[in-house]
Image 1: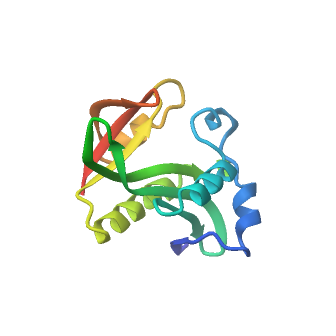
Image 2: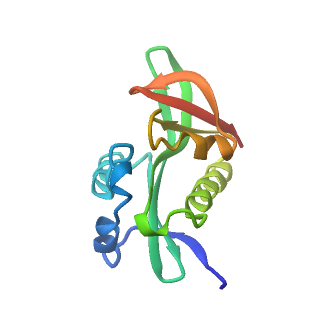
Length: 155
């Protein structure tokens, strides 16, 4: 079966499907629902990059990047970062490469925008996405943000 994976902006025509997207119940403690992400995207419109993940005509996930934000302005106002803010893959569509596709699509977008590093955070513990990100090449920076491990990938 040939798949046609792509990212699409959230539009009036697909927002209801986006809001209905659900991860596995055990993952709900590790990732915010799409509705929260879209509210954040609205509030942080200049730096949020929300996209829906489609396989053909089927919505399979949601991804949101953050673009060129100051990391810790009090410590270093010139330390600006871009990376993965949110990744939600539908519970019944996991394990099919959609997350890997989304992470790589964000990497490509960041590279297109001139970013040299790609950041992500994750919680440790049961059902953590840590192994997923490590397999994709992210490495812990030694930093912690909001109780989560910060990882980086050189672009």
